[in-house]
Length: 182
Image 1 (cartoon, rainbow, N blue to C red):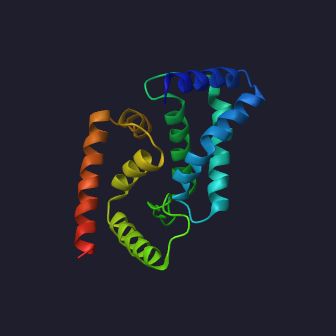
Image 2: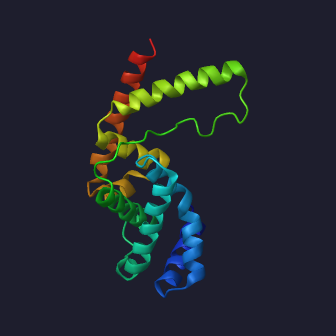
């Protein structure tokens, strides 16, 4: 996040703390796509995802007075709330794997589509073989765009531990993918 954007977020959070509905709307619009993407990996339907993200924002509104600007910032705080919502409401649900090719070609040709589908299947299969903790670290990092410090705050771990977990998870993912791609 650039200094200007961080300053903008800080200003919005200060306004939201005094229950400014426009500030909450701006924070919601800013955060919704990434929160949705994170929750989508864990829930089987868009309706459940929308409910989880809405619940997250409702809890944030109710708890904004307790928010403090510490290391990881507002985004990590929201992800922490969303993570708790998901854990509380859906402990026994089946996991949904990420689509690492979201930004792929908009209209692939037949060969590109076949290769993409095959690669996607292999990546999903490899990702599913990771431990849930490894999956979560990678999702927060790559889907959520969070830094190791932010992930550490969300997961209540040390940043060095998160970096090591991310490195090991990526190494395992590459190895599993390599075995599947033979």
